[in-house]
Image (cartoon, rainbow, N blue to C red; front, side, top):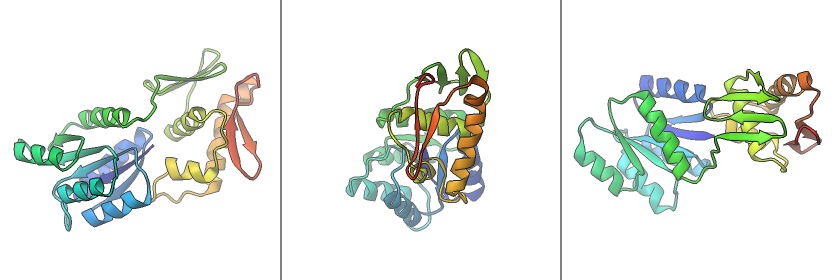
Length: 225
């Protein structure tokens, strides 16, 4: 799931990017309003974290322009501490929620998840495919009751494929949705992660969950298929 973070304080932006990436999000970072508008035009995001105080175009103007062009991406706007007027203007210009600085990272994360849920993203507690279970709340994977340790990226990749059960998912789509613009990601990187997943979720259990569709991509099937 891809997030756009718009924050001109580079140390804070990097800290948030690292934290969100560790949660399994692909994070693109813009440090000014004009770049934010460019990123938003180039890719649909699950949500946007948007600071008010930005060079060039401030957060209000970015938000207003996005809404004027029909962009409905859920926006969490970062406002000044105790800035009631900031909060009012944030909502009036089209933001979905606001969070005063300084803030708790845990609170930001919970607000972000709530925005994504309200934005229509499907986030069931547990994904199931045959005897394979993926609990999105606890980030745990089990097959036949046995817990399988997965890296953050492996978990995100498997969740994406399981949500698209019955469909062929291309490598390009996986790169677009699970790796950010800054990553040096290639089709080979997708293959490496898929191979690692197969070694963990299939090989020890004599199962075949992720099938390769030659020249097209991957699709997942139940363990007995």
